[in-house]
Every structure is written in structure tokens, then in C-alpha cells.
Image 1: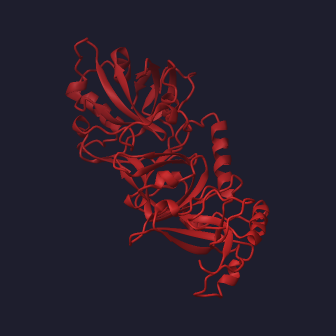
Image 2 (image 1 turned 60 degrees about the horizontal axis):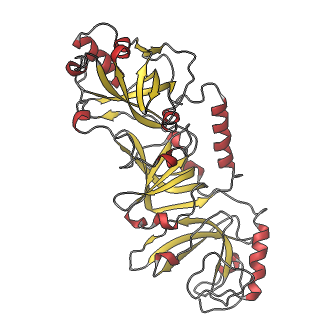
Image 3 (image 1 turned 30 degrees about the vertical axis):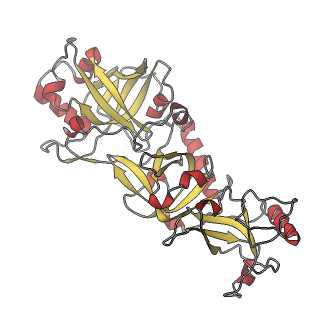
Length: 425
């Protein structure tokens, strides 16, 4: 701005329409930097100060280059909007080209910094739009408060956020043929390629880690986003279903705001999660309940999530899980009730819980124990259909909703095997 007068309160700026003013404030919310409808880039900030703390003042920033837009790193961030001379006493970690800080205004910055500890903070947005991950709804617009665990660039040059709030996303039905697993097998995750093991091991083992995709408007999102490891409120996002897995979607109009750890919604998330994992059944899916279609031999084996198994690839262990069978291979009863060359029965089950999907082998004596000693194709098909959620009298093209089962899973040399489990119907 060409006006080099002193900083004024935001409330005073409201009466100076079409005038250049100098402002300073806390950044409460920011849109994701993106390409504008023209040739430049745009970001929308919402700022507050002492004079305007019950509402939020919107600022539209346009720059020729994406890297010149402000990068918000914390709910404590302060922005000063004008052009002034530089001062060695107070150095911003980012400044737009030509920005020079006026010496008289350093006092404003220091005062704002001191004010931050006691300044009232609001989560922003209407609570009627706020959903937890356990209440996700397909193709509706909503806000979510979550912790950003990781950001990854995808193969098609978009970005994927991995977010978590400690709850379980709802289980989904499948609208597909059972035999589809033979040609187009259900993916184990939304991302095209599996994450490095060190990243997976950093994720919580309880609660869904939701994958959230950006769109083409956020071409350099991951290069500018500084929120990994922080709690945020993502506003105006949506979601869709990808092969029976939830996938979040950011829109061009989506925004985010960093939240302090003492924000009431954040505290509720942390408190609810701690209460959940402290209980004996804390690792059971929130949506499951007995009776189950199966029983297990090892009642004293501890419950675990599938993410518990994924994060311990080097450990040989046997655990008890509550899962759904979402696919089988081979898909036809005439194939999986026929012994393989070794003389053993063998099939692969795709299992899921709210934390992950895995392939697990059912073979040999464990196969016989699971299905019983009747090798009738009709009986075996009926049992597998029940596992997959196919109703009696319905064909394999029907919408199916697999029930929850309990099973023991052993991890040996990196292979998951179902053991000590019997189908009881």
C-alpha cells in the first residue's frame, strides 16, 4: 500500500471504505493458497484484533507468485499489512516483496504478541456444520476438527492429507459383484502406493486416519502447508466413497484454521480418545457389537486393531481382532473348496476395521476349523455369502453390508494368517 500512516484498529478501518489503511491482527483462518480466476494467486485471511475480536475481518490477498502469499503456521500468527522500512529488532519469518517494517509499529507487534496468551480464541464456523469422523456423510459439505498427521504428494500431482480425530468412520456397504475381486481387487488403501513404514508407524493405532485429497487448484499445497502435527479446523470440505473407503475432498472454497491445544473441541477429542483407549474394549470398532458370526479359541489373547499389526511388521505375534470380510479370493465356492497342489485348502480374505485393510490367508487345518468338515459347495457358498454380507436369495450384484466377526490373526514372517477361529453363523 502507498499509504504510510500508522496502524489503525480493524473496527476503524470499516468506516474508511476505498481508503488504504495499515492493519495488524491475529490470523484466525486462511483459505488454501490457489490460482485465481486470472493469472495471479489468491488467499483469503480472516483476522482479528482487540477492537474486532467477536467477529472476523476478511482480507483477500493477490500475488503474482504463489510463494508470495502468506503461509500460516500457528493460531498465534500475527500479520501486518502495509509497506515500510526494515528493522533489525523484529524480523518476520515471511514478508511479501518490498515489505519494510516501520520502527514506530514494532510496539504494536510486541503488544499483540503479549496479548496472544489471553486473547479469546474461537474455533470458527457454525457448530451445525461441524462433524466428527464417526459422523461422516457422503457428498455433504461440512467442517471437521482433526489433527494433521502427514501430507503426501500423489502420482497425479495433487496432495493428500492424512487426518485423525480419534473416532471411527462409519462402515460402508459395497455395490459390486463378488467376482469383481478376481479382475479388479479391492485396494487396501486410498493412496495409489503404500506409505513408507516409518510414516505408517507414526500413525495412531486406534481411530480412522482419513485420507483427504486436494484438487487442481491447490497445485503446491504441500510445499506451503505448515500444519503437520497440529490440530486444525478444515471448513467447507466434502467426501466420497472409494471402493468402500472414505475419502475426504478439499474444494477451492475450503479453508482452515489452526487450533490451540486448549481449544474446547480439541480437548473433547483428546479426552474422548483417552477415555476410549483406557477401557478394556477400547480397540474394538465403535460400530461393532456381539453376537458375531465366529468364535475364537484364544479368549485370553488381547484385542488389537489392524493398524496395531501394520505397525509391528517385524514382530511374530497372535492377536484377536474385530473385522469385516470385504472380499475373498478365489471368489467362487467351487474354487476355494478345492485343495491346492499341496493338498491343503487355502483362500485369501480381505479384512478391514476402521483403521486399515489387510490380506490374510486362511489355509490348512485353520481353513477346516473355520468352515467345518462339510465340503459341500452349497454350504460353503452360503457361509461365505454370510461373511460378505450377501443376503439369502440375492445374487452377487446386490448391495452388501459385511457383518463384524471376531478372529485370531497371527503375524509370521510378514504374512497375516487367520487361526483358531470357527464359523458358527
